[in-house]
Length: 215
Image (tube, rainbow, N blue to C red; front, side, top):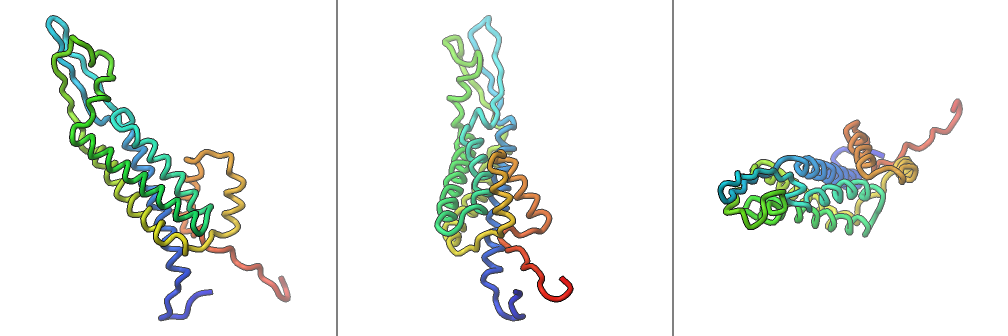
């Protein structure tokens, strides 16, 4: 039932909050996974003569392994927010905030030079023959991971503070989620994203069946 004009609809506001958090989780997770697969740093190791320099690259997954893990957690959280209710959403929100904090920390760590250990694992970069190592960080991808982290923290805190009051999703989505338990987290998160893109509200209950003459 639609609230009368001029009267606030608490349920509608709660559904919008839930939809916003789900979108935020999917977006943050997608940004994190996208950034993790990119080249974050070029490493050059100078070696004693007559040995030539050795070069290598570090992806986001190499330089900051937590970025990939946090991205997967956020995609899983987007699905979990629709599958649980009450205090369960509070727990999911806290996990989202923690994943966002890991993303933010990982991006800042790389930007401040914390890639020495990962660089040393590249073939030829370590060893006694190395006289010096230069790391050229591609700033954009760590910054993108940090942005994803901020988004995840904001969405997670909103879920932790308000998730207990949000309505449960409609039964049609419960049936869909139950039938899709064997599917991967990425596929289920993609289904949620497509549903939101079509303008469907996962928290909106299905319409009541019509009754009466002629039905």
